[in-house]
Structure formats: C-alpha cells, structure tokens
Length: 157
Image (cartoon, rainbow, N blue to C red; front, side, top):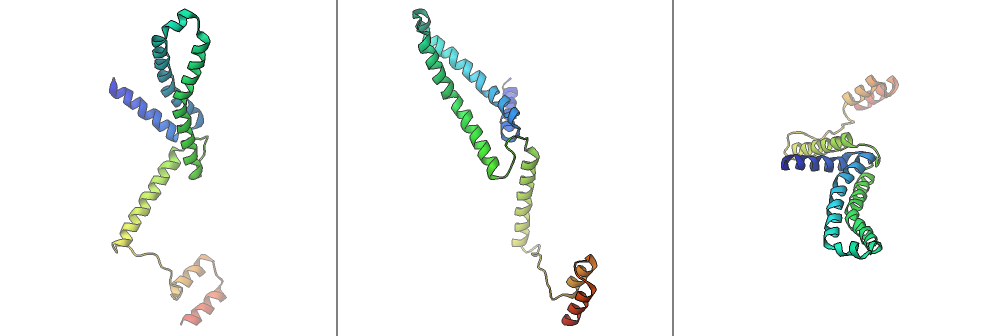
C-alpha cells in the first residue's frame, strides 16, 4: 500500500510540475484535503472543551488561521511553478510536458556537442567564404544570382 501511495504522490507532483491549471488544482486538492482533515481532527480532539462551552466562533477563527497555515505551502508552490514557467516562456495554463521534454533533449544535445568539440572529435562548423564550393552552394540554392557567382568565382580564382 505504501508503494501505491508513493506512486500517487509522485504522479501528483509531476502533474503540478507539468500539468495544466485545472490538473494542478486537483493535485493540490489531493495533497491539501487529507492534510486539512487530519489537522481539523487533531484540533477537535485537543480542544473538545470548546464545543462543550459553546465557543464555536473562536474555533472558526482558529480554523481559518489553520487553513491559511496549511494552504500557504501550496500557494507558494503554485507561485514557484508560475515563476519557472514565465522565466522559460512556457504556458501557465496548459500542460507543458512536451516542452519540458524538448528542453531536456536540447540541453543534453548541447552538452554532448560541447564534449565532442572539447575532445576534438568534431570541429565547429566554420564557414569559409574563400571556398568556391560555398558560393556554388549558394548559387545552387538560389540565394545568389549567376552574375554574382561568376563575379565571386573570378575574384577567387
């Protein structure tokens, strides 16, 4: 049962990290409601004399403070999620799992390329404008006209 509970917590945490706004609200409820109910139960058990004396107004004030104390981590969590998403130009409202996966792949590719360059396995792509092949490639692609290619060929040869 503990493994199932951990997988549910992990899924809720991943939903908060990657999910859309409505999915995040449900994940927060998954964490908040059991915590709140345990806290209310503990408060009722410790202060049972309040209900006997009729001081329910004090209990309501204490329960609202209790709600704020237990809700503040989730409010701060949502704030950090939104800050991360704004910083990286991601949507606040939509599911961003695909974008996060692409960011991880891009970072991994950049690290691998840097390692290959540092170890001398791959050379940085250097454009040699003094090479006739470079200008011929531009001409083939239609980026320059035949007259421009001929003028550059005459200049280089």
